[in-house]
Image 1 (tube, protein in one colour):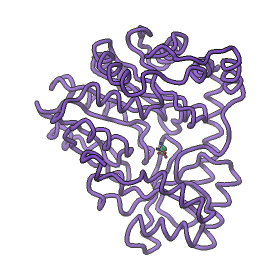
Image 2: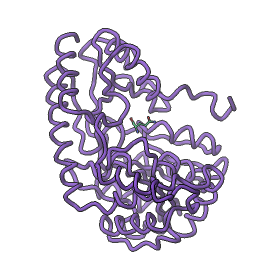
Image 3: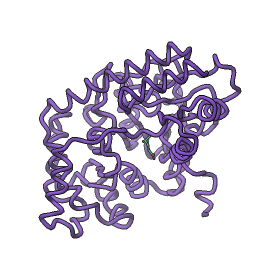
Image 4: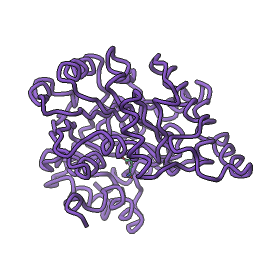
Length: 380
Ligand code: GLN
């Protein structure tokens, strides 16, 4: 394996899902629903395939999907996009992240990230030869460390990478935090990359897109996908929204990474994004119930549960159970209790910082969540 990737192991999600299968454990680790996406979206994919929409799509997205993404963004942020010049369809948000970083970051450029971070950020920044400056979000509230951020952003900084609602903690950036970031970006001529794939899973706060802060659209790449919102994580339809001069970089990387994304799934994606608002309300309602079951269950089991405002994750402190670190705790949980969680130390440059925390997901049917809680009550 190349030097840029040699420090990375099999992704923690793959490792943990494999262990779940091997030990017959209930998987509250990798974030994928154990229920299916809506019929109207699946039917749209089937219809597109039957209608012969099966050859290469236009590289940056079928026109209909680019338009649907722009319309959705207008509803969410008020920003009017040019769907031809400011929207790029990618193979999931993970490809949007890769295309953004590879298309806009030069070797040696500094990029600020916030730990714990989704694992692909670090790996992709490493592929691009970027210098990573990692700032840590600390429990209990995982607030942005403003003074540290101010000190970290210099003339060497090319971009700040944020994620809100935040995986794994569920932290949602407040307007004040976003404005602070926006001011730094403007003052130091820094780009902003924002991963907002959990924007429709906002429970305790209102999701605010960084691009909607005045002056930010022109320097921001906003990334999102269908997977979480439509419970179709295997479809891998994502996108990057950016002003034309940044979109050019994203598209140049995308053109040589994957060239284009699955055509029939893009047709289905454009049907999905035109869902009535009631779809989103119902999604949030369903997930609120699931969240309440898991959070109450984890508290009853004896964890310290940190408040999560958005995403389908909650982070807990496992130290009441006496294990040395998150990895040994998760091993015990899988083998002796039969439940899978995600150790968070892999989401930090310094793993020590995450060793007390593990992440559980509630994107499972209620019976599964209750069964996992019952196992932990009995055996932990
Ligand atoms: N984003 C999902 C999670 O955090 C899974 C991503 C993956 O499996 N690579 O669980």
